[in-house]
Image (cartoon, rainbow over the protein chains, first blue to last red):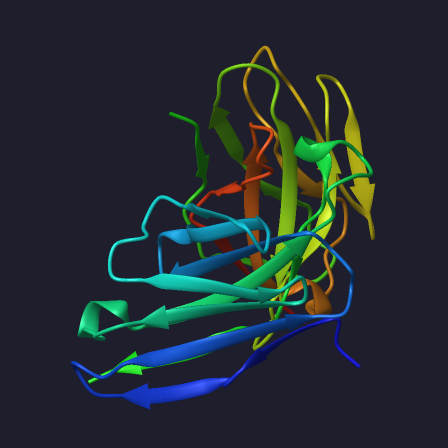
Length: 117
Length: 112
């Protein structure tokens, strides 16, 4: 079984619709992240969370919101989807301790391909 | 702010050729540096990392050395295989939040 799962894997929606992308992990990690990937731009951070009470904006949070329902679950919502939110979305986790925060590996889910028409 | 720049792709090589993918960074302090690989249809996975200057990360025949004097972390492999075809991302983590800053990715295609 995958350690970091994302649902749905693919989604097509229309402009103005509300949509939620879900992420679950069985790695027991405290930190969770949401990124979007666009061709030629790499991955950019949307939101990140250190625990259920600690949510932080990333570099491109406008138009998105998140919810950390439990240590293992971190959801990303688009309240009113627009076409330029068409992208590949990744959830990632990392441990709080270990190699040192800056050196800790992030573990990625398989991604959700979102298309907004 | 912190940033990462990778060489433009795609890079097309024949099997057993030598690979170099250039990566340079801008950061204050002492970031950790990473190479992630994304195989078709999959999420990213860590390929190698280095956490301080002059460290060499290595894995699966790939190597990269953390060069603070040139602010670089170039990825190399002596003999590529078709199975190495993927997108490669250079990234840095420069703060205690653990946030990653990614380069734009370089697509590698290896032909038999």
